[in-house]
Image 1 (cartoon, one colour):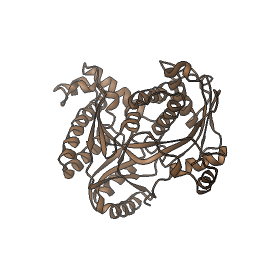
Image 2 (cartoon, rainbow, N blue to C red):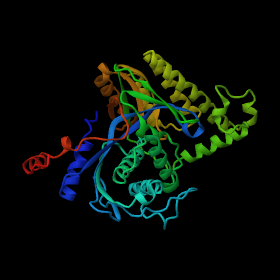
Image 3 (cartoon, rainbow, N blue to C red):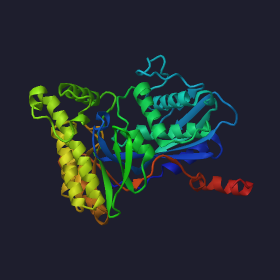
Image 4 (cartoon, rainbow, N blue to C red):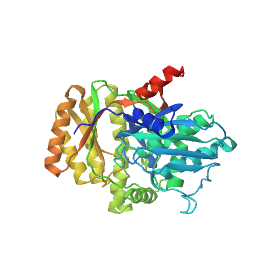
Length: 418
């Protein structure tokens, strides 16, 4: 099926009104992201080219009227809310806390961790609570950064409540710290930066060696099709951590601090210095950085055929050298390649399960979706979902008024609150 237009903002506001009996003061939209190219390069000081997509998590919230001792967040798909008592818990600088220190698990643990990170930065200013309700059009576990979207939404609510200036890069760093040192997921900074700092209509070229960022225009003639294969993986317990360790060993075996230091080519004696697994991991990283540069150049001259060919090459590298693909992801890429209007496709995200992305001519988008879903089901017996997206801006505040339920709008007009 092709997904319907997102409506997370309206659902978040409606849930807030129902839960708390009043309209929220603020509404945050926090997008998911896909990575056009540059996979597993962020924690290797490499290059990435993500973009934020119009599948979003939205958080409706209001600061407490007085200095309060509680942050409380309700979610549309969870029975119990996330509650964080103030002052925020302490955030370790070296690793995740023990079970006793971390009061909450699952999605609530992400809320708790971000509050802890933001609280450490705000100091004594983190004394006022807030309460909110969130809704999301992001499929959890699909590799679209639903956790980073949640982290940045909570960070924005804390910044507003505690009267902190909003710096997307600083907020991304704090959210990343929460994910690493509170939740215990050994991720890179890619997801948080893409969710926080993206520009509408553009992909974001990030150099993780110095965190320089360059917006790269995506032609209006194409859409980014996200094919959700319906498969899922758990990032904290998957082989993601194993791949990171293999990259560290490969760098050490080649005598460099990071695989980025190898430039565009492996040393001639790399096969003698690495075991076969480490050699494949290093080869993916070196060639992937080159692919990022190639896609940036291709988009700059609107050479979509070239950009698509590089995406396909990237998929083969992820499948054969980095070995993070899977039968459903491979089947989805194969279905995309023969569908109308497709320039190229590859798996996206950490791997093993989740989603595939494709660059597709906008005028062929509906035909593309229909063909892909039919071929994917024929190959796997699974039903997929296609999201047709364009690049959007990063985490931001949006007007509450236009998302209020009609009855709430009417009552506000009658009382003169509009």
